[in-house]
Image (cartoon, rainbow, N blue to C red; front, side, top):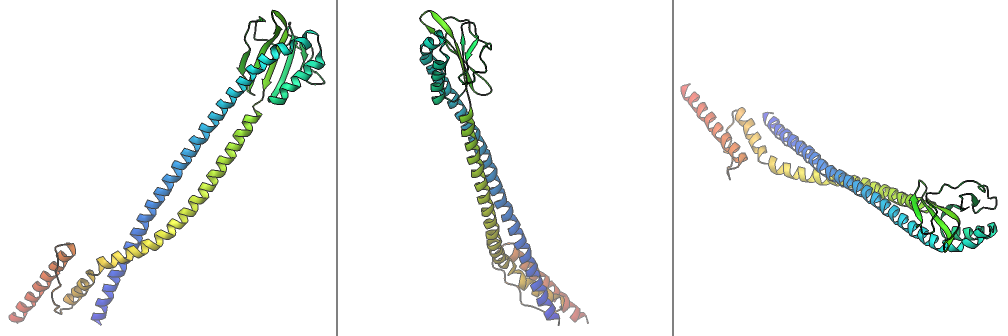
Amino acid sequence: MAENAGFGGSRLTTSNINRRYVAFFLLLLTLVVGAVLGASGYLALQGATRLQQDLQDFFEAEESTRQEEALRATAVYLRSRLFNPLYSLNIEKLNEEIAQVCAWLPVSRFLVSDRTGRILSDGTPENRLYGATLALPMSGSTEEEPIIRPTSEGLELFFVISYGEVIAGFANVKLSNASLEMSLHRLNAASNQFWQDYRQGLTRLAIAAVLTIVLLGSLLSVLLSRILARPLAPMAKAAHKYVEGRREPALPVQSNDELDQLALTLNKLAQNLRNSHELLDQAQ
């Protein structure tokens, strides 16, 4: 009966150690892998955000440069080309020239005025702005360079319509950022889709990592706990028998590690118990 209790205590000790090692290794591996996956996700998110912002800045700068070059070329092309229809007040011809410009540029507004700034054509058949005043940021010199300035919708161009020293009027061309906004929208959509796919992949990787941790952690912890607990089993068995008063052979001591030091201590304790029992027997 006592012997069975001794073996039961040994199994209980080993079982408790196994459970502790399993829990410890699973927790440790989970924390390590979780930290790695979390750091990877955070760094990927930061990198994707920076890349998206850099691409947006690049597209905006490139589009602004392209529009500015196109506006300067347009001013040079139309400066003298619009002179004859404007000088002769041929609104139909002006509208034809405006339509050609609108065909190759994202024009949101095209106004042509006379020398006093009175609008003669806005490029539409209705010509609703006819007679309105065009605010001019220029003095009206034939030598004046085209003026390009940014607006909330895009770039805006002012240039003089002249031939030689004769000024017929002025033109105002405003470009739209619709193409740029469309490109940025596509970029954001692609970036969001990429990040969504990355998060799904990271989630699947995390699930696979957890399953792998549970499997490998359990195997490694059980193996290691058995290796460490194996020397404790005979010690526990011997200690129970010492308590019951039975003499056991000395525990083997093969090295000088902590477990062997414990075995050596138990051997000394057993020897002291045997000596005490012998002295008691002699005294009786």
